[in-house]
Image 1 (cartoon, rainbow, N blue to C red):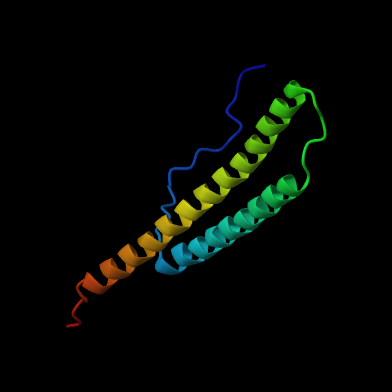
Image 2 (cartoon, one colour):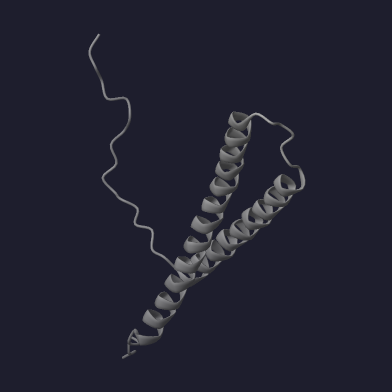
Length: 109
């Protein structure tokens, strides 16, 4: 048995170009995800704050504090990343709109 390339080779490459509509839709989706994660972070932090640790063991208190900080931090990081992506896509939308407005119109003969 010989090694045969089972995947067909394609010579044509599909080039995806950005459009203002696609980038604004992506920005809205990413902003919605950022808001949802922010709301989740606030709910988690409130839940942790309302339920104190009932232990006198210092090791348990330190581990609990570390885990709670880690959970809130990871959700906050996700919220921040989605927020930054939303802002970047919104800026891309503005850039694409400006490029379309500055593009010279082709004259008809």
